[in-house]
Structure formats: C-alpha cells, structure tokens
Length: 210
Image (cartoon, rainbow, N blue to C red; front, top):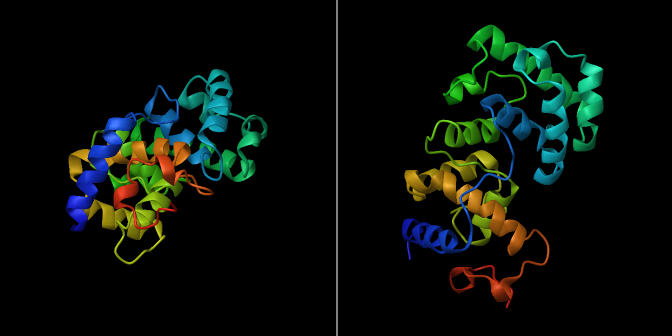
C-alpha cells in the first residue's frame, strides 16, 4: 500500500471514530492564536481553564496590548513558561493592532511575523480560521504519523512531518485529520502504553504492540 492510499485509509477510519473539533476553546481569531501559543508544553485542558480567566479579564485585543505584563504572567502561570508566553501575548497583541488593524493575518508569511508564532500555531490559524489546507504538526501528529509509517524517513522534526503529510493527505482532509489525531492520541495512541488491542488502525500499523 503506497503512502497516499494508506493516508486515505487512516483518514477514513479516524473519521468514523473521532470528531473534527479543535480541543482549544476560542471565540475570536486572536483568542485561538494566543491559546495555541499557551499550549506549548501544556495540556489543552489547562489552557482552556487559563484562557477562560484571561479573556474574561482582557475582553479585547487592545486591553491585552495595554495590560500589565505581570498581571498577564500571573494569570497564565499554570501554563508554564509564563514569563516568555506573557511577553509574546502582549507583544503579539500590540503587533496585530499596529500592523494588521487588530485582525489575525491569513498567510503563513505574515503569521510567522507575529511575536511567538511558529508554524504549528500558524497552520492551526490557517486551517481553523481561514479554512485552508494545513498540517498542524503537534506532538500527537508527529507521534501517530510516525507509528503508522506515514513519514518515509521516520523524522520527528515538525517541519519534515508537516511537509510529508502535506504530500500524502488530501488537502480537504488535512485540518480534520490533525484534529482527529489529537482525540485519537489521547484515547488510544498515547505516548506511553498505547491501547493497541482496541485500536481501529492496528491492522495497518507497523508499530502495534499486540
């Protein structure tokens, strides 16, 4: 089975079991941008708890841009790396206002210019806000795609994984597959002790432990 056919089968099977939903809760474009920044080395569940407080305190992009950085730091402390993340949130808000009139841009090049934004965050914005094909190469995506043998050289470099999946997964299915990888990665294909005995992809997985 070639990689494109295998990827299509993975898409089909996971579509039957998991929803096409983002785990991060956000109601505005910049909220999703900053929630994704906060998710680095932190669980989405914890981020959702923190952003509920953060965006209740700072109800607009301008209020966040004008906020005291120590107050931001204290609110987001549970997410870890809070000083760096607080700096990125404040600078990011200021940048969006001054350069993009308060709107999150819709190209990879422009998104990568926003303080604290890397390719993972940019791809999530492109897919979830603007409906563009994009691979969000987070830890779940990297782990699962490698276990399934979807990455030819077995690379765990996020950029290489993104490029490999961009070539094999149909553009219309890319964003949805990444969402489903997150749900599947928490439910069955966990980092430690994956539940291979109840995995719907066990028959095509070269890494299965059965």
